[in-house]
Image (cartoon, rainbow, N blue to C red; front, side, top):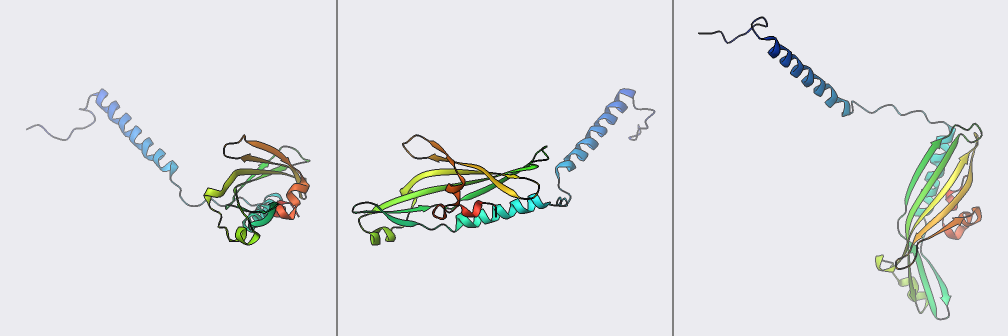
Amino acid sequence: MPSLTTTSSTVPLFHRAHRAAALALAAMALMLAGCDQPTGAAPAAPQGPAETSFDAIVAACTQSVAGRTPTVRPTEPGTWAKVGYGPALVQRELTRTESPITPYVGKIVVKDNEARATAPTEAAAQAITLTPAHLLSNRTHTFVYRFDGKAWHWNNGSRFTKTPSQSDTTEALTLADVSAPSKGFAGCLPR
């Protein structure tokens, strides 16, 4: 009866090369499969004053827009309007530049919905619960800041508004627009 074990000297060269290549491919596949797997949390990069202070601006902005409450005001004789905002999504972006004058540029994007409903009296307008049926527009506010190496400064801003059945609009926002207490964005400014 022939032996079931073979030695490398009895296996043809083609089969040995094929087996070696298959083993090498299998080993590489196993090693590569482990590359995507996290082996533990990487240590966080230390934050400098630019990152830390920008995070504080983002936190204050988030708190400011979360604190907005609906307002009721007269719009025309015999009509009161209640205007409110849906929960806002606040996103941050921080970019390191090559400039020694402005080493960082930051951007905060606030996405929210504006709702509006009217009633014949102030009390009736106060009693309205704003719902998606009262949607007036979807808005995206973009605030851009620059860091001069010591402090953050307001640079510019814009608001993009999508209103159902109307043309989309984009308008520039000034420092005065954003700092107005009635707008709810004053917390988005550097202190």
